[in-house]
Image (cartoon, rainbow, N blue to C red; front, side, top):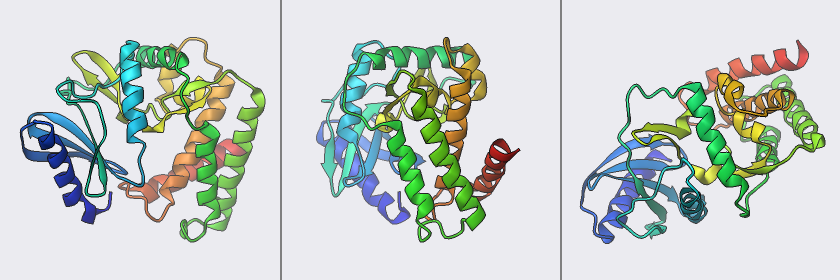
Length: 276
């Protein structure tokens, strides 16, 4: 979120929580990306705030409720208030349960794989409109093609990313593997360790595709603990995801610390994987 918008976003979250009877005197910023994540005190609620024009908050709220009802390991909305989206001053606000982190915080690979497997079982039974994973690949392709938005990306690297994105998307699609609803980005940053076990957060990235696309976002050792994985497909998905996140690092608006340095490293990995 733009720095200039943060104070207004914080005020919107505090106002939304207060309007439903929660006591709010302070807000602590926990994470700032496309959404602002806050811990509101003393009510101890987690607030997620996004600009009205760039969010899928209602989809996330509805999906979380359905997954929790199915026993899936996902973070819950705050039980003290009605599960809905609040709109304030050009922002949408959702209110979630705050989970105190459980040390040491690192989740064992077998537990990680088990939680993801449980999530996939629950998602397999849901029939909700969601983008296809290739839609996200196409967004990356459009960014690569937009020289104004990616001005620092050299011609050779631009061609490399375009070839990787286009070729891998086609190769994965041509396999015709089974597809289902996915988390979309179940990386370690979206899995929290709680006293109730590992819980997935941030459902806004949900899409449809093979489960290997989800596994490609998780650490490599997770795939060894997930049953029935197509290792060749997983290998292609890992390289595709690497090409996608590399593309984001060259976006002139990317705010990830050291993002450009990571982007350069990842370009070398992609080139080595494709050309040896």
